[in-house]
Length: 546
Image (tube, rainbow, N blue to C red; front, side, top):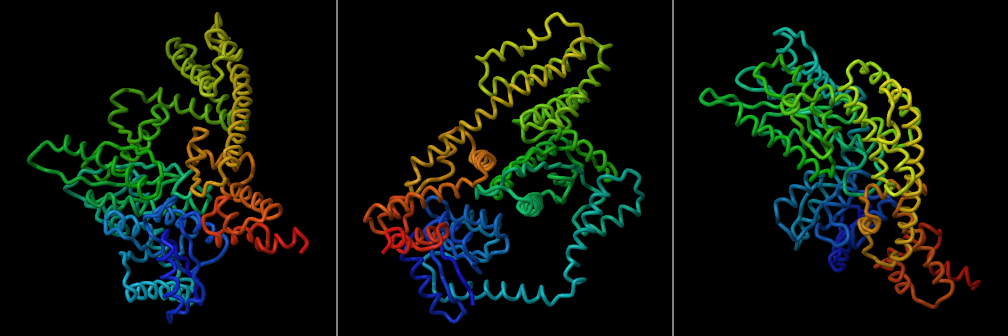
């Protein structure tokens, strides 16, 4: 028997679909309804469902955002989209997110039964086949993908391959990579997986794996016009091999470089649009020689490291970087950013390690006064700037740790000797400031929730706007400081107020429901029972002793 969730902000539509499904012969024994994405997520977190049918255009959280949340939390749950819109972009986004089908309102009941029956049968069949398949067969697809991945990695890293090696690797890859008539390039794609999707939930290890998997698929489709191949790199990095067809009639370099820019922007836009993942892309130069791929891989990796000097630039080109001659300073700047990161995240061990390495490098530069002052200045003024970031420009510490004041009159050797003490003192001030700021932000978040929990359209974006941080950071910070999810806290506040109203007033269930932020009395009852263990009516009887 199957359990289905129907999500639509038109009660008559969801009620009609529920009634028809319950009368069908598809083996459906329960149909739950939700009037928006938030209610749907509450239902999915409280119970197990076999299928979700969702409208696209809904208030509070639309169907696309709901599908993103389902993709992150329950990636194997099938979804059917029902919409009044025939726009191709809606259908395309829904299908990219794994929708089993896309129906247009008003839905023909026979068609509804067909697609629901098909989705349920596929789910049942998939489970049956998975259980029946021998272990060796079950892992065959994964084995083939692993061999393809290994071949691609070897192609872009090995520098001493023979002609036969290339033939063997291209055969294993089984892709559209050509050996002649093309210019090759590498795009290194760094995924920021500290956030992703549209659910505003904390990102788990499973979420990151899912986002990486989905990113590879989107990259390959995005690069299809350039015969692109995408695969996993190391950590949060993906690698793309691109091919641009050569022309004998014109100087191909300029139009090819224009295409590189288009490729970089396409990667950025598509991963953001379909997965809400922020990325940085490092682009190599181009070469007509397939054997140059390892060098191009090094160029792409070098280009992507440039983001530490230019954090606001999402597409970085090796050719630009090398033309500016920033290689040595870029490596130093990368180390400076690591020190900044560990100072912000209060990672004492890593901060000490990176600082020791920095001191050694500076000590070796004392023979070159100009280079020493460039590197030393980049470090101390970057760290000093953190006081600005944390609103300490008016404090005594701001003056105390001004590099012009702190290091005034010191010889180079003395500056190196005092650097560790300077950084540690500055770190203590910044950490104290960050801790105070975070506690203040959480207090403001809590106060905002207490003042607005009755708003049934309350969103994480509203809370984030109050404290002037991103929704992702608000979710992360609140969880870190309170060990609670923001929406769990909102629900707790709502239910606590509902308990009070049930105990001291004669308000009816629907009145209490609306007053504490739930549009649907039925949904309110489900949430109340989830937190308290009994229904609102039973709670009122119990608390009043009758």
